[in-house]
Image (cartoon, rainbow, N blue to C red):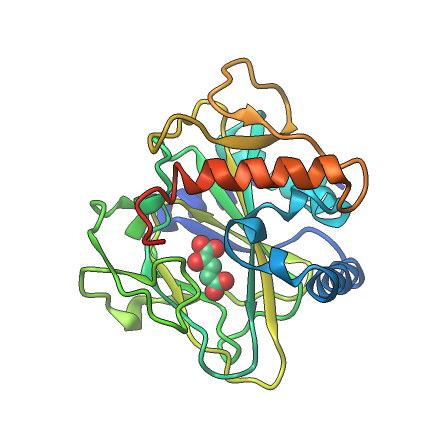
Length: 273
Ligand SMILES: O=C(O)CCC(=O)C(=O)O
């Protein structure tokens, strides 16, 4: 099944800065992925935090497969072209404790990526609803001037710096991105978005897969890495990462350690230790 976006969907994304829902796999497959995630949670809890939790595709075949899902790549290709690098695959697990939340932010403010040929595919492994804290976005906000952010480092904020946009957000203008398991939303690197605490009795689980065009450059630090998942990269702005030969293979774990160190000294270079 190919699911390249229609011209109407592309127009809608360009106008609003996001698009959803787009079915990319069956709910059964999404549930298998959830089981794989829970297995990693049980066997390697240390990989579920920090930069490692953005790069599980380097050490597990299930995440290596997810970032290469042809239907996801078709949709992303419609937005940023046929040559695609995966920059990260970030887990967003929101337990049913009513506390964890994500403040209003624009991704582009912190990533150091020098142009907006970047798209996030947020894959739902459970339902994402208004009650359990689905993402909320302000249509058209990707066209706003980049906003300053205040770093709060708030405990329950799922963002690495607890960053929040230093401008008034009209909550009434926000759109809830409701998804069923196996569906994605797509969002622009500069769209203003947030999510509320999970007020249901079940976890809300999603994976934010960040894709970039090889034309993008990293402006923070000297080096960054990414995985080529479709097409070719004749530019070489990012070091290419290898797919793991098997789960947690020693060479794959060593690659992960190098990549984490590299990202800590580039994108996160100004983070307090
Ligand atoms: O999963 C969430 O609630 C927030 C995710 C997010 O901020 C992102 O994917 O950029």
